[in-house]
Amino acid sequence: MSESLHKSALLLLGHGSTLNADSSAPTYQHAEEIRRRGIFAEVHVAFWKEEPNFRQALRQTNCTTVYAVPNFISSGYFTEQVIPRELGLSGPVTRLGHQDIFYCAPVGLDPSMTEALLRRAEQVVIASNEKIADPSKSACLFICGHGTSFNDNSTKIIHEQAAIIRARGLYADCQAVLMEQTPFVKDWRTLTDCPDVIVVPFFISDGLHSYEDIPVLLGLTHNIREKGFTNPHVEDHRRLWYATAIGTEAFIADVILAQVRQFQANHAGEVTRQNELGERVSPLEALSRFLAEKCGPWKIGEVFIRPGFDLCHLADAKADPVSLTRLETFEDLRKWILLDSAGGFRPLRAAPNLRPGWLYHASSAEDILLALDYLYPAAVANWSLTLQQELPVTAWKETAERQTGRFRIVREIDDSLIQELVSAHCQSGCLKRRLWVPAHQTLETRENEILLLCPEACNFLVGKAREKIKGSSEE
Image 1: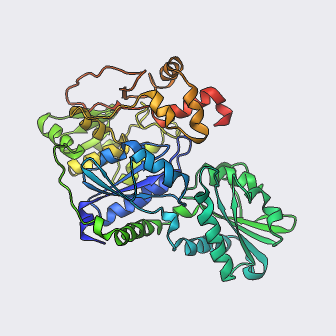
Image 2: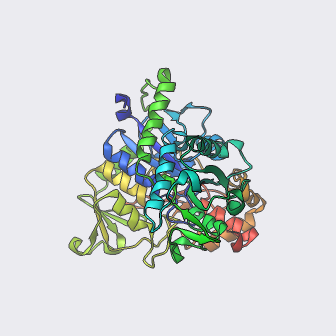
Image 3: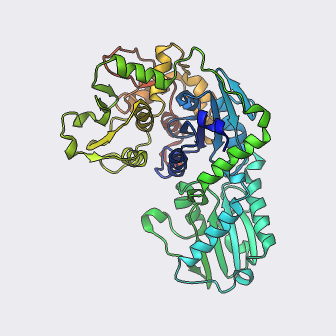
């Protein structure tokens, strides 16, 4: 890796979900592994349907050079349209204010994905109680993707991988199948005559699609997570093995780094410049000044920060640290804050339902900042920009106009209805202070506190807006 990466930030971009706790897990896991290796000065994540969102992602970075890598399978709708629009990119190299953004290829385009698909197919059979004597004579391998009408490139890589594997002759047949386009995965029974069938989801995470949608389409079960599933499924004397999503493989961290290396090779004359920060105060600088100028303890949301840099829940501010569960790593912290006290998924990090009973010791201001980005994504960055009067605020109408696909319908919601949604979901369900119209709130200066700010309607509220029009069954 280039020495310049030690002065650069890596931004890993995932899909995320407000409905499923597993969707963002692989993106976080790969980011944590790359951060552990110490290659970049910073490693951050951002999501389309989870916090921190794409539009706020670059605010978190303290570096002037940022490598953005889409943790997506294909080059299509999200990587060619959504991400560039949300980040404000004009091409592979974009200058945004004081930062140079280097937009790399999606992880799914890396050639190593072929071996990963084959390995996943082989492993799912080995792990079962039954074997396939000669896959080259009796087995069909299905590579399953999503499919979308928004961009033809979205399915291109899936068909290409199926063709590459088919040409090797390791299986009697290998085909691409899709959830929402032909050839449909639900038609697997008629797509092949092979007695043995293996289905590998070409997805980044084991989320709603791989755990619920595809098993239903295959006729296996309504929910693998809840009802379980034993490979192989036997139907009319045919056997079907169903694997887990390929993006959960640990080697994906190496694929991410490979995409950065490939970008450097393709744009060698454009990635050597190191920029000065200029007048902007970075989130780290703002936090460091705050901690130095304000005597502790400090507060942000439901988090209490003791002098000495121990973070805990406000409810545990007076508790003996020995009585609290010590979270040693960012992975520990991520898993703790993922669920509320009742075990439910917390899609909204600023919801007032953070579980108490924990303690995380930060070794430095940098460590605190990263911990807070797990607890309240982009909160310090937004607060820092507000201090400098530079925080962009987006009105509801503009947020609604950016919605595409099945969320396009929220454009129909007027100001009175959005106020109704805010009253139902934001007033008591979120600790942030809303800055966007028509739900604007006034800010109050609070001693020793970093305010949680909401510069635009979040994806959780957008989802509730769609649900208001279409009904909860549609979600």
